[in-house]
Image 1 (cartoon, one colour):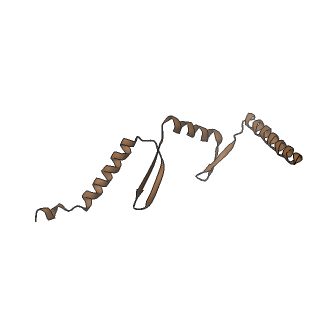
Image 2 (cartoon, rainbow, N blue to C red):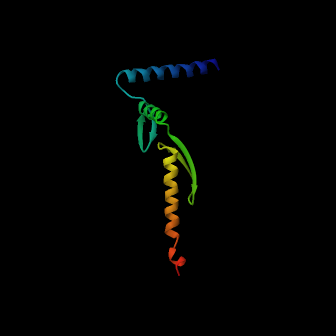
Length: 102
């Protein structure tokens, strides 16, 4: 068991040294794969710090297609106002005022 633990530690040390050597030589450490592209760790960290600084908001809502959720940069008041406007517009599209005057 001791030999297995030593072998694992050796692999981690060798891998860390190779990573640092490649980074020092001008390479990049890639750690995120999304949208069909491999992205460097520095880009992921930059996006994370931007999200923390800009105060992204996490919203959850339900509509006829089911539950949805996600991170949004806008302020809750803007998002709520846009949602209310959309619902009012949809209700007015269905409403027929001609029957009031018949």
